[in-house]
Amino acid sequence: MRKILVLTLASLALPSVAASSEIDCNDPLNTVEINHCAQREVDAAQAELTKYFQASLDQHADDPTLITALRTAQHAWEAFAAAHCDAIYTQWRGGTIRALMALSCREQLTRARTHQLWQAFLADMDGNADLPEPPQPKQP
Image 1 (cartoon, rainbow, N blue to C red):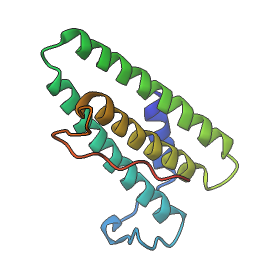
Image 2 (image 1 turned 180 degrees about the horizontal axis):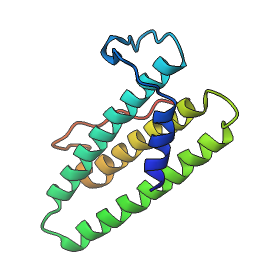
Image 3 (image 1 turned 90 degrees about the vertical axis):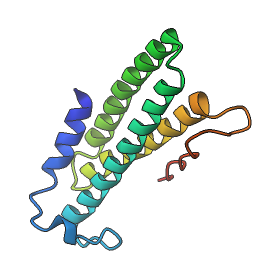
Image 4 (image 1 turned 60 degrees about the vertical axis):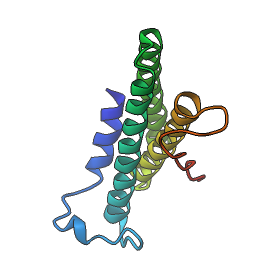
């Protein structure tokens, strides 16, 4: 529910951008474009997380107890990430930067979670895995 709140709040800061494909995310020109580009980064991070989470489930499909534990952990992580980034949004509620701060929070946490999944459930002790090591989140 909170994940939806953060993404909904962020999308409120993104008025309809008629030609969103024309936005140059290397050089956004205003708050709307900056937020649009930040949302694209969150979407990309979420897609990567989904891929690594599914790979974790697939790799351990023969262990139903672990699958249950992974699903429980992921659900708890989603709740934490939503609550934490909602708090970031609230902290910055007085300015137009609030959506960007919440989106940046979500991207960083999502990339960190993806790396945690890779390290704990996909890579062996030598760091070998079927999927490449995902990038570490950018530091603010």
